[in-house]
Image 1 (tube, rainbow, N blue to C red):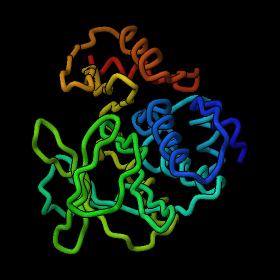
Image 2 (image 1 turned 135 degrees about the vertical axis):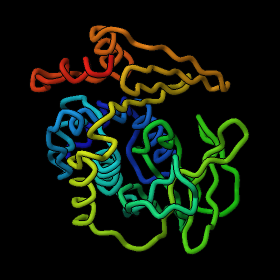
Image 3 (image 1 turned 90 degrees about the horizontal axis):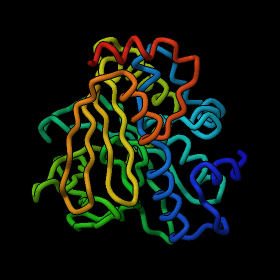
Amino acid sequence: MDLNKYFERIGFTEECKVDFEILKKLNYLHAITIPFENINPLLKLPVKIDINSIVAKLVLKKRGGYCYEQNTLFLHILTEIGFEVRPLAGRVVWNDSINSITSLTHMFLLVTYNQIEYIIDVGFGAQTLTSPLKFVLDEVQETPHETYQIIKFEDDFVLQTRINNNWKSMYRFNKNPQYFVDFEVGNWYTSTNPDFIFTNILFLSKADKNGRYSLVNNIFKTYDLNGTSKTLKIETIEELKNIITSVFNIEISEEEEFLDKKLNTFL
């Protein structure tokens, strides 16, 4: 991989080495630069998760992506630098009960540094981690944005985030080895299933030093680090496309010829 292209994309200018502070910096810069987005599934365009396709889209073309793209890219970057990293899979329970057994369709990373394990996830939408989390149970951990904890539930672990002083579960998982062929199946399912949320609803999200931004269909929200939020209903395609390009920094190319038509259905 051409690491310099990636470093240029996220604005990383320091010496590249296997160091925990470098890991934190890369995690943060990736999360505040490369947005979560599902434009391809929404427009019935293919989502390819081989590393060459991901680099072409997220790095060179300055697009975003979802978990399979984001975390596959970060996996390759960290491996190229020399970090010990492997992928894990989770069952998203974000808007379900912690008891729910949902499909195993979320990909994230486990990094081991100085014999300490860390969870890294640069592809969980509006709760994308902006800092590594130490893999310890029942310990409240602060990041530049939200507060998290990992708990044990039945035979699984659960990653939770604190929202309005309440803990909300994100996904269930274990540390079993995962294989890329299974991620390819999950990626195909989440990007092509006509009943899956990513093929029906526009999702964009990104963090920055001031907070987070999300766009769900035509509802644009900003979340400040102090906990306040604002909601704006978008009325025109021009406004939608302006937010996509100016807030989420996504360069919409001519190949998304059906984007205007699709966006119009959300107004």
